[in-house]
Image 1 (spheres, helix red, strand yellow):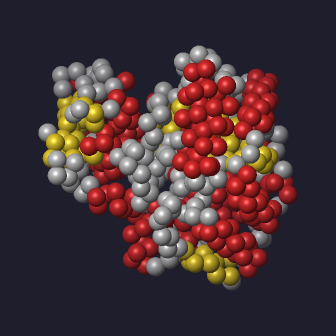
Image 2: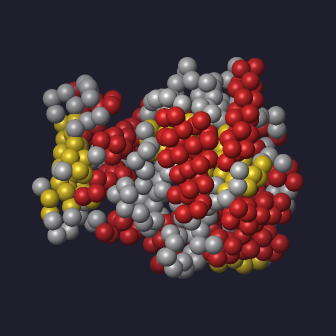
Image 3: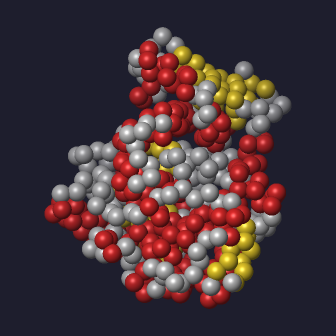
Length: 460
């Protein structure tokens, strides 16, 4: 039934994938758990999936716009259905939900409910220790069906912003195309902009190579999914419990990473990976990392490179390449780097589909809640090991992302004012310069949206 005045739809959605055949116990558990403490998270993530294609990057605005939206799990004799009320009409064609969106909707059900009932609620998972968190990330990904033991290393993670220019977007498509021509797959944060472009380009490259098994893996988390709704090219969607497990999923499943222009979220991802690669136990780990964009993005990467040099030092700068305006060279270098990864995994006996050997310390796994107190108390000084400084800088940028686009973060800033970031004068000057460059280049919000900073910088 459609309410034409507000362009909303009510519907029942039949199951896809692993939900086709369920036992009575599984049906009962899904139905019961979906009504529990995770119901709000399930609803909000489902709404983001259904809002695919309606570009906005304000989680609070989305939830307010569809305040009457609801979703519930309906048991049937051999499975479950999803009942949606007041859903965005853009998710439907002639009254039927688009198949890809339906698959993403059931992926949300799978991950939100599975994590609640099988991971966070299970004492077998020690979510305090580094190994316990790594095991949990592995089980969530395995349950989502992302692993293929027969597949050689070929998954390229692409990071970059949702708020990019048309020129930058077209460049990401060309890079994705060149990667796919070399039989490489794509993993992104699954949203628009630099997360969609590489996948869109790769579909053409895979088609030309008659590669019908291309993987387009999208990894999100509940707090960010409203701002970065899964794009329709994603054929495997995984919702991790929090940003830290999302980032770990990227670096453990990916065999190399390409970074396109972005904003605070992209800086967070860069700092996360560099912090891990700076750890002594990872010094011999091959991990191809390339920063790239069109000629117009050269200034962006100059600012990023300078910030890394001023804060983390030359060792951090040695872990990546910067390639400007040359998609073919990006693909060639990434392909060569992944061959080294394959050889290393083969020699050390590590799995191709999950990087168990990569050392990720608890500083990069512990969920960070960006309250005003936590942001103010971050250890932003140079009197610590570079990988620990990277961990704290990552938290600072994570808080800025929250204040920019996440529902809870936006509300906190509206209530208490901007987050305060305090630290060594030289370090804070570097951070202020980088953030100001993001603002001037309109990388903090979607183009045409006035940006009011959710932070203020002060030196101790």
